[in-house]
Image (tube, rainbow, N blue to C red; front, side):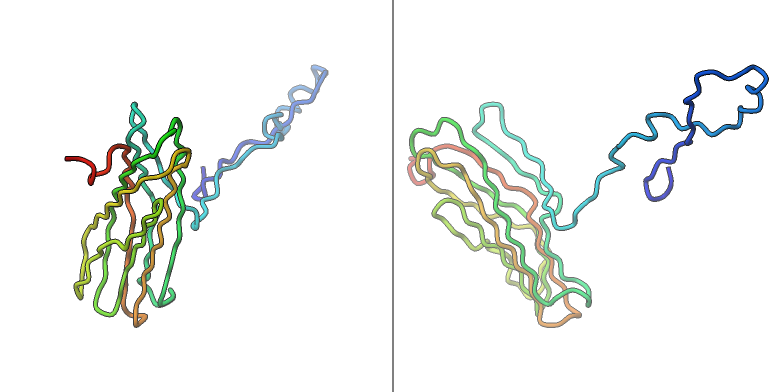
Length: 195
C-alpha cells in the first residue's frame, strides 16, 4: 500500500488453454492478469468534509437514545476563514407505539471556546420549544456546556431536533470554536408533572 492508501497488485493474465512443452520455459516471464484485477471494485471511501458524522445508541427498553457526533463543529481560527460561520443540522428519531402524547427530554452537551471580540451561539429546537443554549459570555472562555429541553409531542409524531450553530469574530486574528458532542434523549413524564 502506498502513502495514498492505494494497494498495488501484480497485473498478470492467464488465458492460455495449451502451451507446448518447448514454449513453457520461455513464457515464464509473461505478465499474468488475474480475472479479479480486471473486475470493477470500489477503491476506497471519499470523506466529505461537509457531512455530519455521528453514531447512535438506543437502550434495550427503547426509552433512552444517545447521538454522539464526530464532527459537529464550527471553528473560525485562521485568517483564511470567514468572520462568521453557521451550520444547521436537523435530526429525526422515529418513534413507534406513541398513541398518546409523548414526553421527551433532550440534553445537549458540547464545548465552546471564545475570546474577546468573538461570540458563539447554539439555538436548539425540539417540538414547540426553542432555546438559546447558555454558552459562557465571559470575555474569554474555554469550557463545556449543557442545555436541557423538555417538551410534549402529540401522538404519532417523530422526535425532530434542529440545531443552529453560529460562531463570529470582529477581527480575522481572533478565533471562536463551538462543538456539539452529544444529544441524550429520554422518554417519560415531564418534570413539571412529577411531584
